Image 1 (cartoon, rainbow over the protein chains, first blue to last red):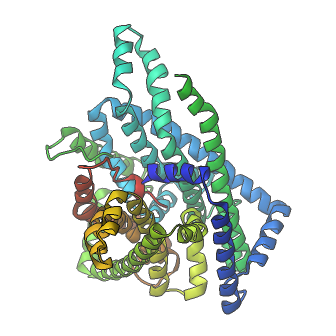
Image 2: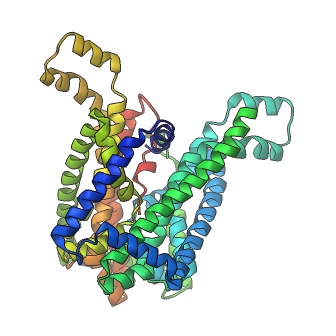
Length: 263
Length: 261
Protein backbone atom coordinates (compact mmCIF):
# COMPACT_ATOMS: atom_id res chain seq x y z
CA UNK A 1 0.00 0.00 0.00
CA UNK A 2 2.72 2.46 0.93
CA UNK A 3 4.65 1.93 -2.25
CA UNK A 4 1.47 2.37 -4.17
CA UNK A 5 0.85 5.67 -2.46
CA UNK A 6 4.18 7.05 -3.50
CA UNK A 7 4.13 5.64 -7.00
CA UNK A 8 0.68 7.02 -7.47
CA UNK A 9 1.80 10.34 -6.18
CA UNK A 10 4.72 10.46 -8.57
CA UNK A 11 2.51 9.41 -11.44
CA UNK A 12 -0.18 11.90 -10.55
CA UNK A 13 2.43 14.64 -10.24
CA UNK A 14 3.76 13.89 -13.66
CA UNK A 15 0.56 13.82 -15.65
CA UNK A 16 -2.04 15.42 -13.46
CA UNK A 17 -5.01 16.76 -15.35
CA UNK A 18 -4.92 20.15 -13.72
CA UNK A 19 -8.48 20.92 -14.76
CA UNK A 20 -9.86 18.00 -12.78
CA UNK A 21 -7.81 18.86 -9.76
CA UNK A 22 -9.15 22.40 -9.78
CA UNK A 23 -12.69 21.19 -10.37
CA UNK A 24 -12.29 18.75 -7.50
CA UNK A 25 -11.09 21.44 -5.13
CA UNK A 26 -13.83 23.84 -6.21
CA UNK A 27 -16.51 21.17 -5.80
CA UNK A 28 -15.14 20.27 -2.39
CA UNK A 29 -15.17 23.91 -1.31
CA UNK A 30 -18.73 24.36 -2.59
CA UNK A 31 -19.95 21.29 -0.73
CA UNK A 32 -18.21 22.56 2.38
CA UNK A 33 -19.81 25.99 1.97
CA UNK A 34 -23.23 24.37 1.69
CA UNK A 35 -22.63 22.29 4.81
CA UNK A 36 -21.60 25.45 6.65
CA UNK A 37 -24.77 27.22 5.46
CA UNK A 38 -26.99 24.39 6.61
CA UNK A 39 -25.42 23.76 9.99
CA UNK A 40 -24.33 27.25 10.98
CA UNK A 41 -20.95 28.70 11.97
CA UNK A 42 -20.82 27.05 15.38
CA UNK A 43 -20.82 23.55 13.90
CA UNK A 44 -19.13 24.06 10.55
CA UNK A 45 -17.03 27.11 9.75
CA UNK A 46 -17.29 28.42 6.19
CA UNK A 47 -14.24 28.15 3.92
CA UNK A 48 -13.84 31.94 4.03
CA UNK A 49 -13.91 32.01 7.83
CA UNK A 50 -11.41 29.16 7.96
CA UNK A 51 -9.04 30.91 5.60
CA UNK A 52 -9.37 34.14 7.52
CA UNK A 53 -8.71 32.28 10.74
CA UNK A 54 -5.67 30.60 9.22
CA UNK A 55 -4.28 33.97 8.16
CA UNK A 56 -4.92 35.26 11.67
CA UNK A 57 -3.01 32.28 13.08
CA UNK A 58 0.03 33.20 11.06
CA UNK A 59 -0.02 36.79 12.28
CA UNK A 60 -0.50 36.01 15.95
CA UNK A 61 2.77 35.35 17.80
CA UNK A 62 1.43 32.67 20.20
CA UNK A 63 0.00 30.63 17.32
CA UNK A 64 3.23 30.90 15.35
CA UNK A 65 5.14 29.89 18.46
CA UNK A 66 2.85 26.89 18.97
CA UNK A 67 3.28 25.90 15.33
CA UNK A 68 7.05 26.14 15.36
CA UNK A 69 7.23 24.29 18.67
CA UNK A 70 5.21 21.41 17.28
CA UNK A 71 7.11 21.44 14.01
CA UNK A 72 10.38 21.25 15.91
CA UNK A 73 9.09 18.29 17.91
CA UNK A 74 7.89 16.60 14.71
CA UNK A 75 11.28 16.98 13.03
CA UNK A 76 13.07 15.75 16.14
CA UNK A 77 10.77 12.73 16.41
CA UNK A 78 11.14 11.99 12.72
CA UNK A 79 14.92 12.16 12.88
CA UNK A 80 15.04 9.87 15.91
CA UNK A 81 12.62 7.48 14.24
CA UNK A 82 14.73 7.27 11.10
CA UNK A 83 17.89 6.66 13.10
CA UNK A 84 16.31 4.07 15.39
CA UNK A 85 14.46 2.39 12.54
CA UNK A 86 17.62 2.20 10.45
CA UNK A 87 19.84 0.98 13.29
CA UNK A 88 17.49 -1.70 14.57
CA UNK A 89 16.25 -2.53 11.08
CA UNK A 90 19.81 -3.09 9.81
CA UNK A 91 20.52 -5.36 12.75
CA UNK A 92 17.31 -7.31 12.36
CA UNK A 93 17.79 -7.51 8.61
CA UNK A 94 21.25 -9.02 9.07
CA UNK A 95 20.42 -11.40 11.85
CA UNK A 96 17.07 -13.18 11.68
CA UNK A 97 17.29 -14.02 15.37
CA UNK A 98 17.38 -10.33 16.24
CA UNK A 99 14.21 -9.91 14.23
CA UNK A 100 12.58 -12.69 16.22
CA UNK A 101 13.77 -11.08 19.43
CA UNK A 102 12.28 -7.69 18.54
CA UNK A 103 9.12 -9.10 17.08
CA UNK A 104 6.99 -9.19 20.25
CA UNK A 105 7.88 -5.61 21.17
CA UNK A 106 7.20 -4.33 17.66
CA UNK A 107 3.90 -6.23 17.50
CA UNK A 108 2.81 -4.62 20.76
CA UNK A 109 3.70 -1.16 19.47
CA UNK A 110 1.68 -1.81 16.34
CA UNK A 111 -1.31 -3.31 18.10
CA UNK A 112 -1.72 -1.03 21.07
CA UNK A 113 -4.19 1.83 20.56
CA UNK A 114 -1.99 4.95 20.32
CA UNK A 115 -4.12 6.81 22.84
CA UNK A 116 -3.46 4.02 25.33
CA UNK A 117 0.28 4.42 24.80
CA UNK A 118 -0.06 8.14 25.42
CA UNK A 119 -1.85 7.39 28.71
CA UNK A 120 0.90 4.89 29.55
CA UNK A 121 3.47 7.62 29.06
CA UNK A 122 1.61 9.90 31.45
CA UNK A 123 1.40 7.19 34.08
CA UNK A 124 5.00 6.08 33.90
CA UNK A 125 7.01 9.14 32.90
CA UNK A 126 4.66 12.00 33.64
CA UNK A 127 3.78 14.74 31.17
CA UNK A 128 6.30 16.84 29.32
CA UNK A 129 7.87 17.69 26.02
CA UNK A 130 10.37 14.84 25.97
CA UNK A 131 7.67 12.32 26.81
CA UNK A 132 5.49 13.51 23.94
CA UNK A 133 8.34 13.14 21.47
CA UNK A 134 9.19 9.71 22.91
CA UNK A 135 5.60 8.54 22.46
CA UNK A 136 5.57 9.69 18.83
CA UNK A 137 8.90 7.98 18.17
CA UNK A 138 7.74 4.72 19.71
CA UNK A 139 4.48 4.70 17.77
CA UNK A 140 6.09 5.62 14.46
CA UNK A 141 9.06 3.28 14.89
CA UNK A 142 7.51 0.02 13.55
CA UNK A 143 6.86 1.57 10.14
CA UNK A 144 10.49 2.52 9.52
CA UNK A 145 11.85 -0.56 11.25
CA UNK A 146 9.76 -2.85 9.04
CA UNK A 147 10.80 -0.85 6.00
CA UNK A 148 14.49 -1.15 6.92
CA UNK A 149 14.27 -4.91 7.49
CA UNK A 150 12.70 -5.42 4.09
CA UNK A 151 15.23 -3.04 2.55
CA UNK A 152 18.25 -4.90 3.93
CA UNK A 153 16.89 -8.13 2.56
CA UNK A 154 16.55 -6.59 -0.89
CA UNK A 155 20.14 -5.29 -1.20
CA UNK A 156 21.66 -6.34 -4.50
CA UNK A 157 23.24 -9.77 -3.97
CA UNK A 158 25.67 -9.31 -6.86
CA UNK A 159 27.03 -6.14 -5.32
CA UNK A 160 27.57 -7.89 -1.99
CA UNK A 161 29.30 -10.77 -3.71
CA UNK A 162 31.64 -8.35 -5.41
CA UNK A 163 32.44 -6.58 -2.15
CA UNK A 164 33.26 -9.91 -0.59
CA UNK A 165 35.43 -11.03 -3.47
CA UNK A 166 37.43 -7.83 -3.35
CA UNK A 167 37.75 -8.16 0.42
CA UNK A 168 36.27 -4.79 1.19
CA UNK A 169 36.33 -4.23 4.96
CA UNK A 170 33.07 -4.92 6.79
CA UNK A 171 32.66 -1.32 7.93
CA UNK A 172 33.07 -0.03 4.39
CA UNK A 173 30.61 -2.64 3.15
CA UNK A 174 28.08 -1.34 5.62
CA UNK A 175 28.61 2.31 4.76
CA UNK A 176 29.06 1.94 1.02
CA UNK A 177 26.48 -0.70 0.22
CA UNK A 178 23.95 -1.28 2.94
CA UNK A 179 23.21 2.21 4.19
CA UNK A 180 22.66 3.84 0.77
CA UNK A 181 20.67 0.92 -0.58
CA UNK A 182 18.56 0.71 2.55
CA UNK A 183 17.97 4.44 2.66
CA UNK A 184 16.84 4.37 -0.94
CA UNK A 185 14.27 1.64 -0.49
CA UNK A 186 13.26 3.18 2.80
CA UNK A 187 12.14 6.40 1.13
CA UNK A 188 8.47 5.50 0.69
CA UNK A 189 8.34 4.58 4.37
CA UNK A 190 10.01 7.84 5.35
CA UNK A 191 7.49 9.81 3.31
CA UNK A 192 4.65 7.97 5.03
CA UNK A 193 6.31 8.39 8.41
CA UNK A 194 6.41 12.18 8.00
CA UNK A 195 2.64 12.45 7.80
CA UNK A 196 2.18 9.83 10.48
CA UNK A 197 4.51 11.62 12.89
CA UNK A 198 2.65 14.90 12.55
CA UNK A 199 -0.60 13.14 13.44
CA UNK A 200 0.91 11.10 16.25
CA UNK A 201 2.63 14.06 17.80
CA UNK A 202 -0.51 16.18 17.86
CA UNK A 203 -2.45 13.27 19.33
CA UNK A 204 0.18 12.91 22.06
CA UNK A 205 0.12 16.66 22.71
CA UNK A 206 -3.65 16.64 23.15
CA UNK A 207 -3.78 13.54 25.37
CA UNK A 208 -0.71 14.26 27.46
CA UNK A 209 -1.65 17.92 27.62
CA UNK A 210 1.79 19.41 27.11
CA UNK A 211 1.90 23.19 27.15
CA UNK A 212 2.83 25.29 24.14
CA UNK A 213 2.14 23.48 20.91
CA UNK A 214 -0.65 22.87 18.43
CA UNK A 215 -2.21 20.32 20.78
CA UNK A 216 -2.75 22.95 23.44
CA UNK A 217 -3.96 25.50 20.91
CA UNK A 218 -6.51 22.97 19.69
CA UNK A 219 -7.71 22.13 23.18
CA UNK A 220 -8.18 25.84 23.89
CA UNK A 221 -10.02 26.40 20.63
CA UNK A 222 -12.33 23.57 21.58
CA UNK A 223 -13.05 25.03 25.00
CA UNK A 224 -13.87 28.38 23.39
CA UNK A 225 -15.98 26.63 20.74
CA UNK A 226 -13.87 28.41 18.11
CA UNK A 227 -14.79 26.10 15.24
CA UNK A 228 -13.12 28.26 12.61
CA UNK A 229 -9.84 28.02 14.49
CA UNK A 230 -10.00 24.21 14.66
CA UNK A 231 -10.71 24.09 10.94
CA UNK A 232 -7.85 26.49 10.32
CA UNK A 233 -5.43 24.30 12.27
CA UNK A 234 -6.56 21.28 10.27
CA UNK A 235 -5.88 23.17 7.05
CA UNK A 236 -2.48 24.31 8.31
CA UNK A 237 -1.57 20.76 9.30
CA UNK A 238 -2.64 19.26 5.99
CA UNK A 239 -0.53 21.91 4.24
CA UNK A 240 2.41 21.16 6.53
CA UNK A 241 2.27 17.45 5.81
CA UNK A 242 2.13 18.17 2.08
CA UNK A 243 5.05 20.59 2.43
CA UNK A 244 7.23 18.16 4.37
CA UNK A 245 6.47 15.43 1.86
CA UNK A 246 7.14 17.79 -1.03
CA UNK A 247 10.50 18.91 0.35
CA UNK A 248 11.51 15.33 1.03
CA UNK A 249 10.42 14.21 -2.41
CA UNK A 250 12.42 17.06 -3.92
CA UNK A 251 15.51 16.09 -1.96
CA UNK A 252 15.00 12.49 -3.04
CA UNK A 253 14.70 13.41 -6.66
CA UNK A 254 17.68 15.72 -6.72
CA UNK A 255 20.03 13.60 -4.59
CA UNK A 256 19.14 9.97 -4.46
CA UNK A 257 17.84 9.54 -7.96
CA UNK A 258 20.92 11.36 -9.23
CA UNK A 259 23.00 8.95 -7.19
CA UNK A 260 21.10 6.08 -8.73
CA UNK A 261 21.66 7.40 -12.23
CA UNK A 262 25.38 7.77 -11.62
CA UNK A 263 25.67 4.24 -10.42
CA UNK B 1 7.18 -7.47 9.08
CA UNK B 2 7.14 -10.06 6.41
CA UNK B 3 4.98 -13.08 6.89
CA UNK B 4 7.75 -15.51 6.08
CA UNK B 5 7.46 -16.87 9.56
CA UNK B 6 5.98 -20.25 8.85
CA UNK B 7 4.88 -22.30 11.82
CA UNK B 8 8.16 -23.40 13.34
CA UNK B 9 8.68 -22.43 16.96
CA UNK B 10 11.25 -19.70 17.30
CA UNK B 11 13.25 -19.60 20.53
CA UNK B 12 14.24 -15.98 20.09
CA UNK B 13 10.65 -14.89 19.74
CA UNK B 14 9.90 -16.48 23.09
CA UNK B 15 13.06 -14.90 24.49
CA UNK B 16 11.78 -11.54 23.23
CA UNK B 17 8.50 -12.01 25.08
CA UNK B 18 10.37 -13.09 28.21
CA UNK B 19 12.63 -10.03 27.99
CA UNK B 20 9.65 -7.70 27.93
CA UNK B 21 8.03 -9.39 30.91
CA UNK B 22 11.25 -9.50 32.93
CA UNK B 23 12.11 -5.87 32.13
CA UNK B 24 8.58 -4.87 33.12
CA UNK B 25 8.80 -6.70 36.42
CA UNK B 26 12.26 -5.28 37.17
CA UNK B 27 11.12 -1.71 36.53
CA UNK B 28 7.99 -2.30 38.57
CA UNK B 29 9.98 -3.56 41.55
CA UNK B 30 12.81 -1.04 41.36
CA UNK B 31 10.82 2.10 40.68
CA UNK B 32 7.77 1.72 42.82
CA UNK B 33 4.84 3.73 41.63
CA UNK B 34 5.91 3.94 37.98
CA UNK B 35 4.63 0.58 36.80
CA UNK B 36 2.27 -1.84 38.50
CA UNK B 37 3.54 -5.39 39.03
CA UNK B 38 2.39 -7.93 36.45
CA UNK B 39 0.50 -9.68 39.22
CA UNK B 40 -1.50 -6.54 39.96
CA UNK B 41 -2.36 -6.19 36.28
CA UNK B 42 -3.54 -9.81 36.23
CA UNK B 43 -5.64 -9.25 39.32
CA UNK B 44 -7.20 -6.15 37.76
CA UNK B 45 -8.00 -8.15 34.68
CA UNK B 46 -9.63 -10.87 36.76
CA UNK B 47 -11.61 -8.30 38.68
CA UNK B 48 -12.83 -6.75 35.43
CA UNK B 49 -13.89 -10.16 34.18
CA UNK B 50 -15.63 -11.07 37.45
CA UNK B 51 -17.61 -7.86 37.71
CA UNK B 52 -18.64 -8.38 34.07
CA UNK B 53 -17.40 -4.87 33.32
CA UNK B 54 -15.01 -6.41 30.82
CA UNK B 55 -17.78 -8.07 28.83
CA UNK B 56 -20.00 -5.02 28.89
CA UNK B 57 -17.42 -2.46 27.78
CA UNK B 58 -15.89 -4.81 25.25
CA UNK B 59 -19.31 -5.50 23.73
CA UNK B 60 -20.03 -1.78 23.47
CA UNK B 61 -16.69 -1.01 21.84
CA UNK B 62 -16.83 -3.97 19.49
CA UNK B 63 -20.35 -3.10 18.44
CA UNK B 64 -19.35 0.48 17.67
CA UNK B 65 -16.24 -0.45 15.76
CA UNK B 66 -18.08 -3.09 13.74
CA UNK B 67 -20.87 -0.68 12.81
CA UNK B 68 -18.35 2.00 11.92
CA UNK B 69 -16.25 -0.46 9.96
CA UNK B 70 -19.24 -1.70 7.98
CA UNK B 71 -20.32 1.82 7.04
CA UNK B 72 -16.76 2.97 6.32
CA UNK B 73 -15.85 -0.09 4.28
CA UNK B 74 -19.04 0.09 2.23
CA UNK B 75 -18.54 3.80 1.56
CA UNK B 76 -14.90 3.22 0.70
CA UNK B 77 -15.79 0.42 -1.66
CA UNK B 78 -18.43 2.37 -3.57
CA UNK B 79 -16.43 5.57 -3.82
CA UNK B 80 -13.32 3.58 -4.71
CA UNK B 81 -15.14 1.70 -7.45
CA UNK B 82 -16.60 4.94 -8.78
CA UNK B 83 -13.18 6.59 -8.74
CA UNK B 84 -11.67 3.62 -10.49
CA UNK B 85 -14.29 3.72 -13.22
CA UNK B 86 -14.14 7.37 -13.88
CA UNK B 87 -11.13 9.59 -13.38
CA UNK B 88 -13.15 12.76 -12.69
CA UNK B 89 -14.59 11.17 -9.54
CA UNK B 90 -11.05 10.33 -8.46
CA UNK B 91 -10.00 13.93 -8.74
CA UNK B 92 -13.22 15.17 -7.15
CA UNK B 93 -12.56 13.00 -4.10
CA UNK B 94 -8.84 13.75 -3.96
CA UNK B 95 -9.02 16.80 -1.67
CA UNK B 96 -11.37 15.03 0.74
CA UNK B 97 -9.27 11.87 0.95
CA UNK B 98 -6.11 13.95 1.25
CA UNK B 99 -7.49 15.88 4.20
CA UNK B 100 -8.78 12.71 5.85
CA UNK B 101 -5.40 11.01 5.50
CA UNK B 102 -3.49 13.98 6.84
CA UNK B 103 -5.61 15.24 9.73
CA UNK B 104 -5.00 13.89 13.21
CA UNK B 105 -8.01 11.91 14.41
CA UNK B 106 -8.07 13.76 17.74
CA UNK B 107 -8.92 16.99 15.94
CA UNK B 108 -11.75 15.37 14.03
CA UNK B 109 -12.97 13.82 17.28
CA UNK B 110 -13.13 17.30 18.78
CA UNK B 111 -15.29 18.48 15.90
CA UNK B 112 -17.44 15.35 15.93
CA UNK B 113 -18.12 15.86 19.63
CA UNK B 114 -19.61 19.23 18.74
CA UNK B 115 -21.59 17.77 15.84
CA UNK B 116 -22.95 14.61 17.38
CA UNK B 117 -22.56 15.18 21.08
CA UNK B 118 -20.92 12.65 23.33
CA UNK B 119 -21.73 9.01 22.74
CA UNK B 120 -22.21 6.16 20.33
CA UNK B 121 -22.98 8.01 17.11
CA UNK B 122 -19.83 10.10 17.47
CA UNK B 123 -17.62 7.01 17.91
CA UNK B 124 -19.29 5.28 14.97
CA UNK B 125 -18.87 8.37 12.80
CA UNK B 126 -15.15 8.61 13.61
CA UNK B 127 -14.61 4.91 12.95
CA UNK B 128 -16.43 5.07 9.62
CA UNK B 129 -14.64 8.25 8.58
CA UNK B 130 -11.19 6.81 9.19
CA UNK B 131 -11.76 3.34 7.78
CA UNK B 132 -13.27 4.71 4.58
CA UNK B 133 -10.01 6.05 3.03
CA UNK B 134 -8.23 2.74 3.68
CA UNK B 135 -10.84 0.77 1.76
CA UNK B 136 -10.97 3.51 -0.89
CA UNK B 137 -7.22 3.44 -1.54
CA UNK B 138 -7.24 -0.34 -1.69
CA UNK B 139 -10.14 -0.53 -4.16
CA UNK B 140 -8.75 2.22 -6.40
CA UNK B 141 -5.49 0.30 -6.49
CA UNK B 142 -7.38 -2.90 -7.31
CA UNK B 143 -9.23 -1.21 -10.16
CA UNK B 144 -5.94 -0.05 -11.63
CA UNK B 145 -4.67 -3.59 -11.70
CA UNK B 146 -7.58 -4.97 -13.69
CA UNK B 147 -6.40 -6.45 -16.95
CA UNK B 148 -7.24 -4.08 -19.81
CA UNK B 149 -7.14 -6.91 -22.34
CA UNK B 150 -9.77 -8.77 -20.40
CA UNK B 151 -12.04 -5.75 -20.46
CA UNK B 152 -11.50 -5.34 -24.17
CA UNK B 153 -12.40 -8.95 -24.75
CA UNK B 154 -15.55 -8.47 -22.69
CA UNK B 155 -16.45 -5.48 -24.83
CA UNK B 156 -15.82 -7.43 -28.03
CA UNK B 157 -17.99 -10.29 -26.89
CA UNK B 158 -20.63 -7.86 -25.63
CA UNK B 159 -20.87 -9.35 -22.21
CA UNK B 160 -23.75 -8.07 -20.15
CA UNK B 161 -23.04 -5.65 -17.37
CA UNK B 162 -23.93 -8.33 -14.84
CA UNK B 163 -21.48 -10.85 -16.30
CA UNK B 164 -18.85 -8.17 -16.54
CA UNK B 165 -19.15 -7.39 -12.85
CA UNK B 166 -19.58 -10.95 -11.71
CA UNK B 167 -16.77 -12.54 -13.68
CA UNK B 168 -14.22 -9.78 -14.21
CA UNK B 169 -14.47 -6.93 -11.73
CA UNK B 170 -15.39 -8.78 -8.56
CA UNK B 171 -12.79 -11.56 -8.81
CA UNK B 172 -10.13 -8.98 -9.63
CA UNK B 173 -11.27 -6.72 -6.83
CA UNK B 174 -11.64 -9.52 -4.30
CA UNK B 175 -8.03 -9.27 -3.17
CA UNK B 176 -8.21 -5.50 -2.95
CA UNK B 177 -11.38 -5.67 -0.90
CA UNK B 178 -9.86 -8.29 1.37
CA UNK B 179 -6.67 -6.30 1.97
CA UNK B 180 -8.58 -3.10 2.51
CA UNK B 181 -10.96 -4.75 4.91
CA UNK B 182 -8.20 -6.45 6.89
CA UNK B 183 -6.28 -3.18 7.29
CA UNK B 184 -9.44 -1.23 8.02
CA UNK B 185 -10.52 -3.70 10.71
CA UNK B 186 -7.35 -3.11 12.73
CA UNK B 187 -7.75 0.63 12.40
CA UNK B 188 -11.45 0.53 13.30
CA UNK B 189 -10.98 -0.75 16.83
CA UNK B 190 -8.22 1.71 17.61
CA UNK B 191 -10.22 4.65 16.28
CA UNK B 192 -13.23 3.59 18.33
CA UNK B 193 -11.11 3.44 21.48
CA UNK B 194 -9.68 6.87 20.74
CA UNK B 195 -13.11 8.39 20.15
CA UNK B 196 -14.39 6.82 23.37
CA UNK B 197 -11.41 8.02 25.35
CA UNK B 198 -12.03 11.62 24.35
CA UNK B 199 -15.79 11.73 24.38
CA UNK B 200 -17.99 8.92 25.56
CA UNK B 201 -19.64 7.66 28.71
CA UNK B 202 -18.96 4.00 28.11
CA UNK B 203 -16.74 1.61 26.16
CA UNK B 204 -13.12 0.61 26.61
CA UNK B 205 -11.76 4.05 25.76
CA UNK B 206 -13.93 5.62 28.46
CA UNK B 207 -12.80 2.97 30.93
CA UNK B 208 -9.17 3.84 30.11
CA UNK B 209 -9.81 7.53 30.59
CA UNK B 210 -11.34 6.77 33.98
CA UNK B 211 -8.19 4.97 35.11
CA UNK B 212 -6.36 8.24 34.56
CA UNK B 213 -8.64 10.06 36.98
CA UNK B 214 -8.56 7.23 39.51
CA UNK B 215 -4.79 6.88 39.09
CA UNK B 216 -5.32 3.15 38.72
CA UNK B 217 -2.41 2.12 36.50
CA UNK B 218 -2.99 -1.61 36.96
CA UNK B 219 -6.46 -1.26 35.53
CA UNK B 220 -5.18 0.79 32.58
CA UNK B 221 -2.75 -1.99 31.69
CA UNK B 222 -5.50 -4.56 32.11
CA UNK B 223 -7.50 -2.66 29.48
CA UNK B 224 -4.43 -2.35 27.27
CA UNK B 225 -4.03 -6.12 27.53
CA UNK B 226 -7.65 -6.50 26.41
CA UNK B 227 -6.93 -4.26 23.40
CA UNK B 228 -3.85 -6.31 22.56
CA UNK B 229 -5.89 -9.50 22.67
CA UNK B 230 -8.49 -7.99 20.34
CA UNK B 231 -5.74 -6.86 17.96
CA UNK B 232 -4.09 -10.27 18.18
CA UNK B 233 -7.33 -12.07 17.36
CA UNK B 234 -7.88 -9.75 14.38
CA UNK B 235 -4.33 -10.34 13.18
CA UNK B 236 -4.71 -14.07 13.55
CA UNK B 237 -8.14 -14.38 11.97
CA UNK B 238 -8.03 -11.69 9.33
CA UNK B 239 -4.74 -9.94 8.58
CA UNK B 240 -2.20 -12.73 8.43
CA UNK B 241 -4.36 -15.19 6.43
CA UNK B 242 -4.98 -12.40 3.92
CA UNK B 243 -1.28 -11.49 3.82
CA UNK B 244 -0.31 -15.11 3.36
CA UNK B 245 -2.91 -15.51 0.62
CA UNK B 246 -1.70 -12.41 -1.17
CA UNK B 247 1.95 -13.37 -0.92
CA UNK B 248 1.43 -15.75 -3.76
CA UNK B 249 1.28 -12.73 -6.03
CA UNK B 250 3.24 -10.03 -4.36
CA UNK B 251 4.96 -9.14 -1.14
CA UNK B 252 2.73 -7.50 1.39
CA UNK B 253 3.85 -5.90 4.58
CA UNK B 254 1.00 -6.55 6.90
CA UNK B 255 1.90 -3.77 9.33
CA UNK B 256 2.76 -0.84 7.16
CA UNK B 257 -0.76 -0.06 6.09
CA UNK B 258 -2.20 -0.33 9.55
CA UNK B 259 0.05 2.11 11.35
CA UNK B 260 -2.14 5.02 12.28
CA UNK B 261 -2.38 7.33 15.17
